[in-house]
Length: 96
Image 1 (cartoon, rainbow, N blue to C red):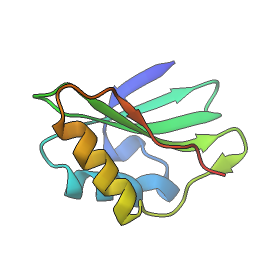
Image 2 (cartoon, helix red, strand yellow):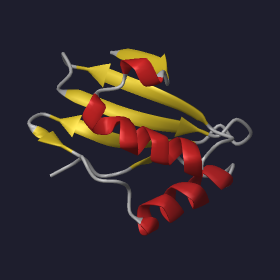
Image 3 (spheres, rainbow, N blue to C red):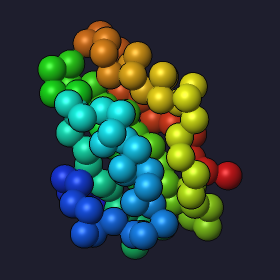
């Protein structure tokens, strides 16, 4: 498993738009990248610096990949969870 802080230069071209969306919507959060299982699992994660709650967004899982921006309801779900210091971490469903 490989966790790294977000660096635009290391993000695959097809996923940069999703990371840019997350940065724009959550400028106060830390943005992380996780790659594991030889790149068969690739995800973005936001960590709120005050609540320390994390939200993971799977981008690649096996042969499936997410290429579209997150929907408004997903963004709201992330926003609500990150703001609640008593909440468990959130992991959105993997791509189909």
